[in-house]
Length: 209
Image 1 (cartoon, rainbow, N blue to C red):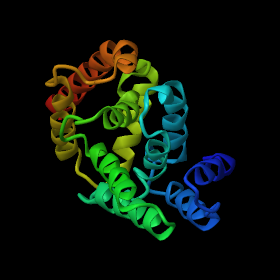
Image 2: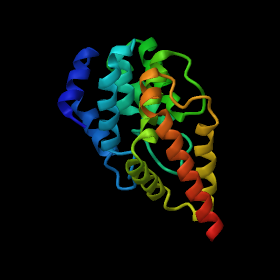
Image 3: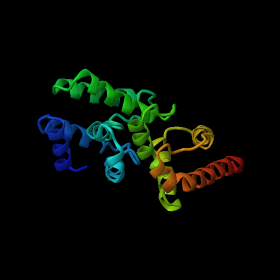
């Protein structure tokens, strides 16, 4: 997470540098219980966004949504996205943004729940960026799965395997994981291979216990 980049985004949004909020986000993404949802994840999302920002309608809103989308992350909580979205919306309104802009950013972050298909191109872009980890190399994906398990260390192994298989299967059940052509071409095939391999391993581990 680069503060110069944050300040540049604030200027683009006509907001002061908001060093206090940057510090709060930096602290949030450094929490000890995080293993995947860290500053590294945000940096990766921003790097991938840079590859496709020319496809975005509201470039600065998507970038702000990336900064905030996992700001609140408690592994056993069901309202992380809502609380992260609420924080972003509150931040924007306190700094003079319109209600329309604040609400668009709120909707973008809520879309990272990954429970529904995107209903506009900017939302699809953000979702694809967030899910790009699924299509990385097998080694990178394996480390992702290990990190997720560490974040859910308090969940019993049998229950984690069951729930994780269910979540991963929802992605396989889609006609396509990635809506945007760039991400589809780059990651769709490898994402499905990674997910199938992960499910097989989880199911095999479960059968062995």
